[in-house]
Length: 444
Image (cartoon, rainbow, N blue to C red; front, side, top):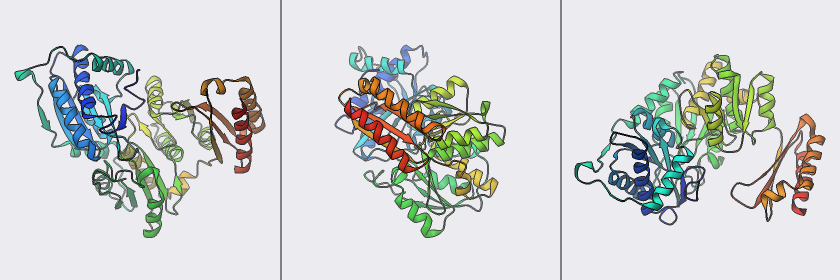
């Protein structure tokens, strides 16, 4: 791919990097590329966004771009990113467009595209769109061939009905606090969990266009921890701005990360006979304690590079149905084509309702090893990471730790950094080993 599309669409500060002109050009190019790929009918696109103020401006540009290229548009308003993916499939659309920068701060925004069926747009199609943006249109449709716009009045109801069907277990008796990050889930998450029977206390669910992710949500858990403790809730659920991820807090305020949530869901599906091939997908950043827990329950783990796109690729390539990241992106391919924080929360809370066990006990299946991460600035990340001295230091560290620890060394994907991550039986040992390896990286 070129410079336009990153790992999760087009991202940047709104009205600076991501301008209305760029949003219009990308959207129009996407519609033209779809037509070039043997779509013989008039293309249909679904467009949604998170509540950022800039989303209003960018949505107008996206709609203008799509309709100017002859595509009809269904607008679904403010909804989570996974909702737009689902609705792209549900409405039989050829393209889905969501305007969101996920957990990033408010000045940023993003433009993410979904293919028909709600799947991630293939890299080759993104490359074609990028080339089309550069080339521009030779001709444009006129008259009746110009695309039309209409709102999708049943979008929220359709998405909530899908989630309720995907996890039909009632949540009666559970009291939860949900932190909506002043984001896209501010309306739908409390509504969904209450409809499933839970007693819901919603916090940070008043988006004003400027406050999304501002010290709240899944990347800032202190407020949720305090609320759960203060009202004596059974658990807390934290979403990010576009609600494609979910983290949790137990009744005592302890953070339950994506590894633990993934383990809870894997064991639940395994017990139901629904975990395909008794295998789960995780990334290289998953704690060794997660791997030990899966091994102890005879569940295989497929490991990918960091990034939910790699988790999705592995799930689809091996026909598996559960995978995720430590950050809380968890994918249930039987019900979704991308990570869905609301779906994850439903699965976790259903497990609490079925077992009548507290979240702390369910999460305890993963005994997380202490972890140390050191980011070492370097001049050439790939050369340093592959140098004989560094490789020898990593090999020595792995031999020292044996089965009781782990060493991961990887160059950053975006900065001139080499990341040194060590897990060990004690924090002191992890710090010592990571420090030694980092010193070798610095010296190269």
